[in-house]
Image 1: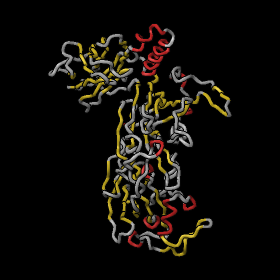
Image 2: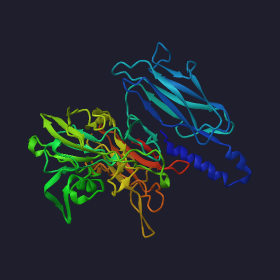
Image 3: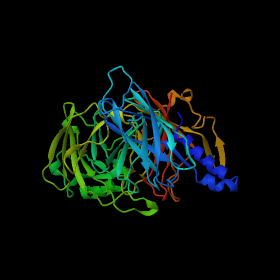
Image 4: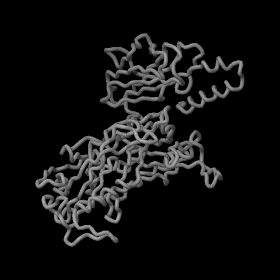
Length: 493
């Protein structure tokens, strides 16, 4: 089935043709192309309705309609049957209205019944007519809707990271074509549900932590607490917790791993021991608030300080026992955090004192847009992308060319368009290094504004064995504002 890339190329070809014949220029410029945003949609047993998007090549020049027909595979239209649509498609066609200036339109598919186990039910929609004169139907002209979960054929996704301040983390399930947005300030720490007893930090808030190796009692720790003997790191001597705070916040790496490593290989908090005395108190810098105003180069990700906490984590059988309090407090709270094998980790908010829902079940996401904002003087990566190594997702990068000192070297690999399942290098799939994509899909943004790279794409194998090729198609919006990424991907079969 054709992808959005073909749709876009067709539009570009139209514009190129328009430059070849000035007599036809007025006619060509009026052409208006329409397509489904994606080639397929599938429903889980709990899904009841989904919005089907029709996209335009440019703003609609006038008010009008897109007419869609459908064909059925063991499905019946009607309120007492399998599905309905809004607007109504009872006659076998759906007329979807749009207004002048719109960039697309939508209709709703309502699934009323799940199929009996072993029975396939599906509906295929086809764009048949557009009311605008000189319009064309190009790209994803058909869309397949499955009543049962099946791997999406591909399409495009615009992760809703929230604009220039990146307020959201976004988890993406490619096979379900589903995104999950979570405010990045809803949690600070998370507890690993796997066999290793690990605690993770929320790097998107600049949360950092450092062990207070001389303390096992939270009530004995405040800013005024002294180290006896004093701590010495290279040529730096630290006498009190207050002095220690400066280095933890400003990324003095001689203090130890103050933040989780971006590739997932190290955590700032040591693995939790079953022996209580081996688990020390940790000083936790809570990072920065999400700012409300944009910064330079249309990006601003760190606001006011969120303060300091102290924590100690113990094991209670297979569960975690978290002790926590604000740094200057003389009492602390305690809570048991049970592992949940359906999830990679269980997130916790120190500020609200409660467990919070953050990432989806480990089988339900493949990649994650997550800002990695280091300590005060550390590096920041606003457009950072991880893949779900803990959940079993594998990934590798395909580089098509390289430019060194102005010399371009092309590599003997297929282009994104020509890459097929036969080209997959199974041994190259990485299930451990979670930041292979990272920020590599765009330039650094310093000293010049960040730009999208077109020399690479990525191959992904999800937890159930679906293979996808994926590349990024946008970094900014029409106003050149960051925080507006877009990607496209295709199922390899």
